[in-house]
Length: 295
Image (cartoon, rainbow, N blue to C red; front, side, top):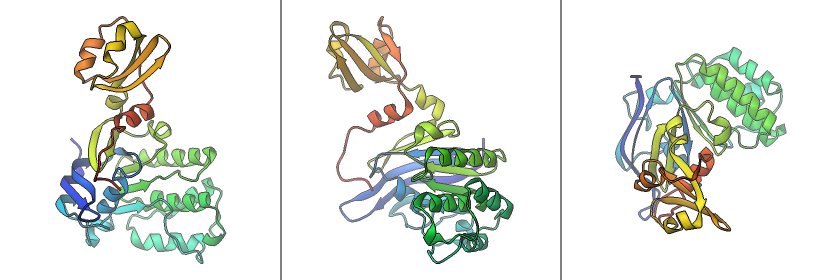
């Protein structure tokens, strides 16, 4: 079993007295693994990442990174790199200034990797931040995250604002870096279809709660569309285990999880069965809204 890098037990965080951002979350992250963090807007993803990065103090529960609490703990914070969406950078700086400051923060900083990344993104050290487009600023932030070589690196929506070609550049750089196998990477992203080839384990948040933490293979194989005639399947349209219903004339498709009681019955039906896309399954899994939690 791999070394545990992050251990969270019963984590609860309140944005206000009436609103929970995280509700009794427990999870573990292991050394050398790549995790995907997925959830709808307001699911609690950003709050979770900011707790890990030491920005927020938990209201309840225990959060440990490298066996220490991260909040206001320099020993921990120098071992984690958190690249936020729209990562803040001084507009007056040149790119080389951004990299120079980052090098002071991260003990494992790799200057050669930083230069290689800039070249891959077609960026020049002498360019000023204020002259960069949104996508170019994102590429600079991604360069910092990659070159930090931090033991735990967290990317929040890393490809937001990037076109398809530049996203491919990031994926190639990330895959090259992952060959070392000693970094734990957490990727919060809506581009789950593109990143699923590099993600080993998925963490799914919904309304501040942890909905799933499983290997991506298990999640991809966790549900199925059962398609047949209305006569055959019509009686199950309102069944509690059905995540989604699609009807087309006399034909109906039901999305059902394979660990449900309904699947135990439907799997023997002489019906067409099709695995949904990962994105479709997760969207349907988190369709049911609850009040009072999120952010």
